[in-house]
Amino acid sequence: MKLFKLILSVAAGTMLVTGCTQQQARKPLSHSSGTFMKESVERNKKLIAGEEAKIESVIKKDAKSNYIATAKGYWYKYDVKSTATDSITPKKGDVAYFDYEVKDLDGNVIYTELELRPQVYLVDKQNIMMGMRDGIKLMKKGEKITFLFPSHMGYGYHGDDRRIGHNQPLMVTIALKDIKPEKEARTENESKTQQPTEAPKPTEEPKQ
Image (cartoon, rainbow, N blue to C red; front, side, top):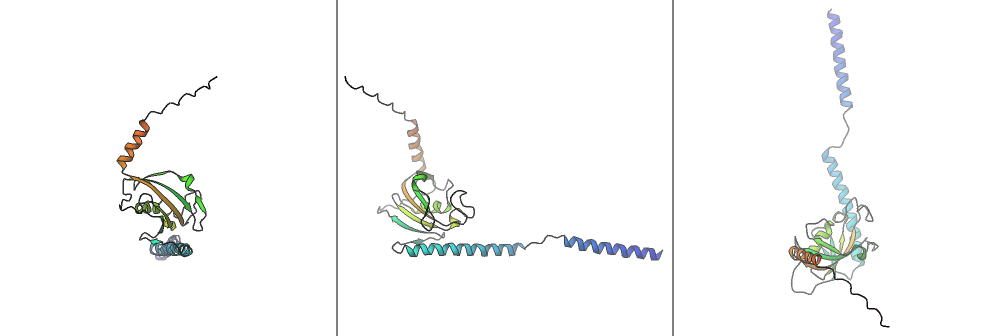
């Protein structure tokens, strides 16, 4: 009887050890969250460094222009700078009227100004490219500026699902046509839509 109990105890212990071993073997293998984050940060650093090197190359080739670096991580130059003494720039809630063109860093046109115009943008209340959202607020009426945006200020990893590829830095030229307060722009728009359409004048018949 004692022998039988001993055999049962040994068998149970063996099963317990085997069960634990099998459970441990089924654990999923994964990187710790800290390791994953570090690897992700390193990849992003390399990506940004590569894009900044390309942008620096563009700036060196365009040596006659004075490019200004921003704290947000993009660069710009004035093609047309306002000589007006006022310092009015678009602020949240204003309506900005502008035209723009999009190129890659080699100067190849991705979207022409003609196919993108006209742009009417409610500042900081509508979705546009992150870089443009910030850059427009630096501009005065009548100015034309060329911006060099790294991909994280453009369309990022996914691109725009059309012509802009993933992780693609961009050269964007913006011409700011006008700035108006939201209420003024809305009133003007309403008055235009309420005006009756003028009937076409009858064509005079040629005298016999």
